[in-house]
Image 1 (tube, protein in one colour):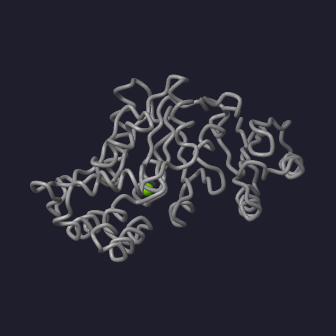
Image 2 (cartoon, rainbow, N blue to C red):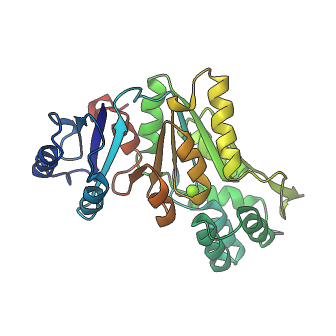
Amino acid sequence: MYAISLLAAPGRLDPALVTSLQTAFGAGSAQWLAPDEAAEFPVVSTPSNFEEVRVQIAQMGVDLNIVPATNRKKRLLIADMDSTMIGQECIDELADEAGVGARVADITARAMNGELDFEAAIDERVGLLKGLPLAVIKSVLETRITLAPGGETLLKTMKANGAYAALVSGGFVQFTSAIAARLGFDENRANTLLEDGDTLSGKVQRPILGQEAKVEALNDITARLNITTEDAIAVGDGANDLAMIHRAGMGVALHAKPTVAAAAPIKVNHGDLTSLLFLQGYAKTDFV
Ligand SMILES: [Mg+2]
């Protein structure tokens, strides 16, 4: 059995649409996880016209996904940071402070869309930050970085239900350590910006953590917790998140770059991070 999930921004999921899709798919009765926001119904297999309907429904501001009905509540959350758990790309914000914002933002956008070699793109951008005072990191965290909507509820609810949470980033520990602490992640992994006295050296510690490091983190952490990758939900928005998204039992592309969304099994373009709770079958009344 599978659950077909319909998610929209609060107040934007029309009950009539849910009923008509349920009829069209020959599905069982609908269950509302949040009024006018999240609903689902059971099906025995993926409807043959699922992808076609998904595209039409997306134009109406609704995310249509299908997930296995069993083992839905996951025991590990493994999440990307930049543009996933926070609203910004940290390196772009640092670069803006350093006066090389436009140049770095262009490289970031192309790298996250999978157009550039990840390591070369990191080296080039970090090189442009050479000499930036370390104090700028703290000020960027305080004044420019915002938490993505729904993230705190996602963490609190999964952790209250016994899950472990890991923040895995191709960005930098100087940021992930602060964001992990703010949101309640149990651990964080990322690259390290090397320092030279009170400034950034323009270099990154080797080896550079990219797409493979995220999959390794998923494998390591599930082995350590004595669970399997089927027990994990992964979320990210960039090309370097795709392998982790494919490997996890539930892999979610959240407000992702177009090439990433196209390749991911579960796509959330309209809901916020609490969509990950609805996909696991939590009702809004279960949220912490
Ligand atoms: Mg990202």
